[in-house]
Amino acid sequence: MKTKKLINDGARAVDEMLVGVLAAHGKHLYAVDGSPRSIIAKDGPRPGKVGLVIGGGSGHEPTFLGFVGKGLADACAVGNVFASPPPDPIIECAKAASGGAGVLFMYGNYAGDVMNFDMAAEMLSMDDIEARTVLTTDDVASAPRDQRQKRRGVAGNFFIFKAAGAACDLMLSFDECERIARKANDATYTMGVALAPCSLPQTLRPNFDIGADEMEIGMGIHGEPGVQRDKLLPADQVVDDMLDRILAEMSPSRGDKVALLVNSLGSTPLMELYIMNRRVSQRLADIGVDIHATWVGNYCTSLEMAGASITMHHLDGELQTMLDHPCDCAMFRAG
Amino acid sequence: MTIDETTLKSMFSDIATAITADRDRLCALDGVIGDADHGIAMELGFNAARDAVAALGPEADPTAVLNTAAKAFLNAVGASSGPLYATAFMRAGAVAKGKAVLSDADFVEVFRAMAQGIRDRGKAEPGEKTMIDAWVPAAEAAAAASAGGASAAEAIDAAAKAADKGAEATKAMVAAKGRSARLGDRSIGHVDPGAASAVTVITAIAKSLSAAQA
Image (cartoon, rainbow over the protein chains, first blue to last red):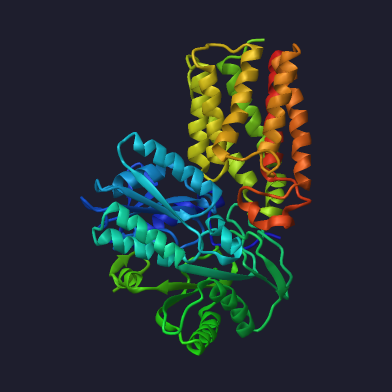
């Protein structure tokens, strides 16, 4: 049976979405002439500033294009649903974002994205634009701790891009922006749980099978199978399982500060996210960890997948400064 | 036989037809260990390549056809298959450079360059459960057949059979590259979708060549 979606044509879904995004957020965003998949921040790029280009497949909104704006990303290359953008729109983004101080590419660690962004970086070097890459690898479930560089990037992008965007906006050097981006990635940990699949606009079929009474811990944001499938448990027990995995790696000390993101993978409602957040905040209070700021809602989705993720961003003074730095994006504002 | 821009344009058209016919099977294979869109990406890419090369005039040489296909495929798809197949066609174009027509032996070299391009771009080795497990044995079989005096059509037919065997062998492999690598042992028992589509592509090339020869 086909799934139901409010679309006109699966093949045109991404482009029609972009027309709607620009209609709603023309104050913040524009598309490069002749390159409609290259979305640029109106007040972002400026001379002497490191340009921050993010991007990836569509279907994760507001990731990635919602985080384009002053103080965060300068540009976003938009791919097909769950598929990396090709090099051309990435190159156009880099040219628009470049202020002569270098361009930072930041995106989730997926084979397709790496190949396309690397090809774009090679081509840009011929135009004397230096692009450096910082991959996000925050998904704790996607590889063992000693293989952090193999992990995929998921909802933690939110904090990692935020830190890098602030560093760029503060006009820090290319080396400093890159260092802070890597540091933010190393300090960010996400665990997800999926309850029900999504379907792609072009297929209208569930992208994985899961029993009516089952959950899958660690599932990826493209429906990549996770690490463990169980009977669905009460929220507190699910949160405990997820938190235990995060805390085992983060190993915070009493008095440490974190920023929190409780994120819906698409169709899980705020009610359930706040129930989860209740448990998270209780658990952190029990171990004396201070929650500096919390975001709850749809920040990195997988179309209409049911499920949620918890991200912890382990703050020190520098990362807190970056987090608190103001930004003004189409779908996110802070400070 | 001689292979010119017309032969290559027909070849891209034939590959596109074969991939469209195979689209749903490829998506289903990908649904088991990936995100169920591989057939869509391949169809988008080869349709774009077919249309772009069809728009070239008769003055286009084989290199122009292959480079045009590369660019069209890449920009339509992105994803993983975009850079991999685009690199394959660009490398093929480089090998064909300066030749208005390709001999049977030239075409086998072009074919081998495609496999090498995919291997270099994806940095995958045989045994890691990727399309390389179809492309590498295919390139070796084509080279061996060509060295033994086979025509291009015969050599690529041998390549298609080797690719099929290679793809079948991915069932027993644990994914080590690409999205399915995160599955670990759970990828065992399933054919890699990229290897399966490689078989479709190579088989379509073989059929296209033998039809052109007839």
